[in-house]
Image (cartoon, rainbow, N blue to C red; front, side, top):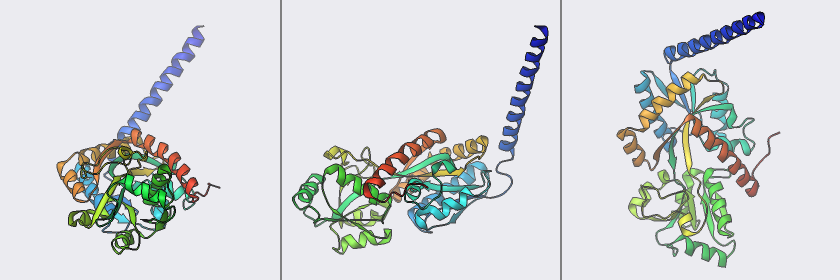
Length: 328
């Protein structure tokens, strides 16, 4: 028995020592980060896009709070797959990040990525955008109910534009009209063509994000029938949600920061804190409002839960549309 107690004591000492070593390694990583070089944020869309502008605002805040150099690099293409592949293959040390979005799931389930969201460590959600169903201001529909009633009376006659096959606006639009029980014609355009196609009379309606609509909302050239989000957008307080109008669909577009799988937790924690402080500033709130987006910070753990839950929902919707390509 004394011998067993000795072994047990040695084991306890060894475990305690190991924990101290791990703690000291974590502390060392935290103390060194981000002193070794620039932090790079990959943006999946071109320079000048709302995604790019909001990423640069965030980069400025992170740089300030971490006393580090943070640069933004645009790596657009393939629905985000090019940027995701690049970042996933970088060293997991906190110096290469991606400005991710719902596209991490749509690119994977459409067969454009060989890996899913689990290739990254969630750091923080930063903002959300509200998909909107909009028509020209001279259109006969004043509410979603009127639009749905007309679509039911004329199956397949009404055309609705989106930002391209497999895009967030395409998937949300399909979910909306499936839930409403109506048949419309989805018309996929490049994101830059959606608004001109509506204003030019080439389509009857569109599902689009606010950043593309802000100038036209101010001028009065378009009317928003519904916000496809859980609750009303503070920037559009007079626009009811689809749920308020009897159609149970809510699918916000979000953006956040993720890092390659295996990035140390102390590093994730430091980035998470810098993002939280940035998003909480009045400057970030004002700049976001000007772009038609809403700051919506979520810490790493909750952000990860959101991505995992939504990934399954998006896979189901894409299967319904017929654009899901199961992983090999």
